[in-house]
Length: 260
Ligand code: NAP
Figure 1 (cartoon, rainbow, N blue to C red):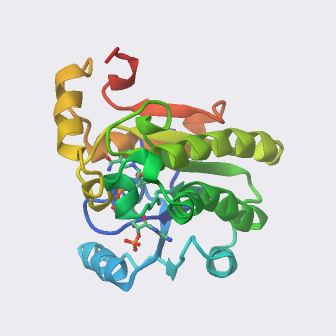
Figure 2 (cartoon, protein in one colour):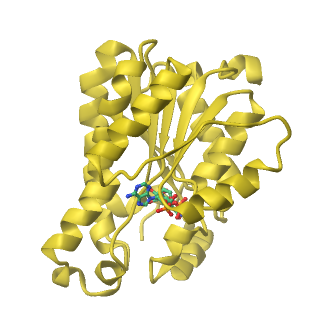
């Protein structure tokens, strides 16, 4: 499988490991298992500590770990400059970052504040554009950028509110970015994951209800695992998906095809 994926020794930046339940950590583990050179970015010191704890389980693995707050252009520029200077070519990016204020998920959607709306967009959608732009000078061999989205981008899901609007903007950004950088051999795609119990998911008030509903309704009659999302991520980062860009790929047990 490693030969098929051709990810061995490729420099892949993984953004968004908060702990061992993070979707980004599942993807990083899969990338490490096929011999990719994973570079991590983190925001909070607490996330760095959790990441270091997981990395300590690997012998002889000392990846580059760089701080990057996607709400700051300066931080993004600095992080990718450091990564580019240290590794040379960047072959892939996993953008697995999102955030909205808790009150904007708990309150009625109509009560969304101007600041809360802008903050969710900035962190969860605009950040993909800023990251792609900062990485572009180092993506000299082309490459693949993936981001994580959710069905709430296109359907009203209880409690997803302002994050659904941010994910809609993220998916549109994927298409515009794909069109813009396709000529440089860079592909941009989103993976629409089914519900997975993570720190971020805890912020969605109706999360447990969503898990149950997916299990009941999805064609596969179960929720998906982080490993399944990671496996599709490997495919989307690798030349196996070389003809695919600007797409939203669903890893949700088929839930999105069903009526309500
Ligand atoms: P998670 O473990 O909580 O990861 C979210 C990550 O976003 C954290 O590492 C967090 O870092 C990072 N982040 C937030 N604000 C940031 C900022 N300003 N700068 C840099 N990093 C920032 O949750 P997750 O579920 O794996 O989420 C990853 C992605 O998957 C998100 O885009 C989410 O919307 C998407 N997704 C999740 C599900 C699900 O059911 N879990 C389903 C579909 C899509 P810090 O903690 O250090 O701030």
